[in-house]
Length: 231
Length: 225
Image 1 (cartoon, rainbow over the protein chains, first blue to last red):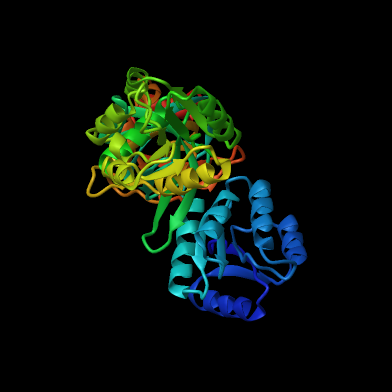
Image 2 (cartoon, rainbow over the protein chains, first blue to last red):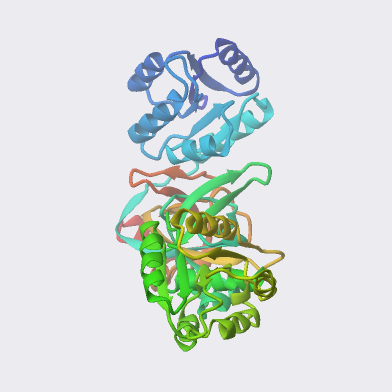
């Protein structure tokens, strides 16, 4: 029996892009592709059938940035199961971060690099089918710790800036360990909160702005003293 | 935002001026500490580092001349802006004051607008003070993660981090609770699945098992993991 073709829904206000993607997918992927120009048509189609993957533009006919709301709505409806690629010419760090926060699985900047798009689509579709065994919910979630390498970039009176390979949500608590903390505070570890996370586009790294979590009275004094010593 | 409130230390034995000065600065959002004696300010400096000093260099009872020398010889305090605030002074005295590291000076009586704008000028440049790291070792950030779902091939971890690939050495998972279930945390590798946002607003990462004992597999199959 022939394998069932995966379905891809794509929304973009530019009909030429839809035509182009359709023709490339037809030549290079064995998928059912459907393009939509309006949010209404796109949401109507999703209501009838959940695709295996969605591609969403950010600036749509309805309004600039409407794709953010569509991404969020689709993610809420499909929980974590369906991959969403946001593909847009809005490629500032803030747009990418926001798209990821709203539930995009990946981001691709326009003009479209079709080789990259095909790679991403194949990668995400493979992932969606790789777990064929029944998944059980763990009744009492098992606790663990993710230890992530962060590169210290800069310290000023307000923030500690570190770069990260991974996007981290705002307000995440990070228990940070670094020799600098011993130098400044006399203790090797300190809890920080992620105040902001932005993509440093040319480096492909995220810059995290960290602020102390529950700082003691002397926190800023110690930072101030350290900065004075260094300058 | 977490910006600190700027702190100003005043050394002067003129109580009336101190009172007005404190009121003006506090009204503009500064924390002010007034000192009449050298020993008081020196003792306070052991615990706190102000953002600026305001000192009357003619205030002999307060020991301001000694304070200027003390500050000049301290590697940290000499970098903190100091504003001289005094009665009329001669050209020679101004030169002497500047040679002792006084950044700027004002003539009494107090002109509120002027002192605030001078403070603002020096503290604005202070805000850009920063330290750039060069070739420093990586920091390790520990972030909470919960395993919520499990299958014979994968275990799902939810965290605020969007793990994107399985590059060696960029992260590791530590879980005593997994170890307690006879599963080594090091046996997990991020599967080819990407990560998705869960309903709770976290990212779901699918980790592939690498070698599970038959007993653990039985636990998973029976839904008792």
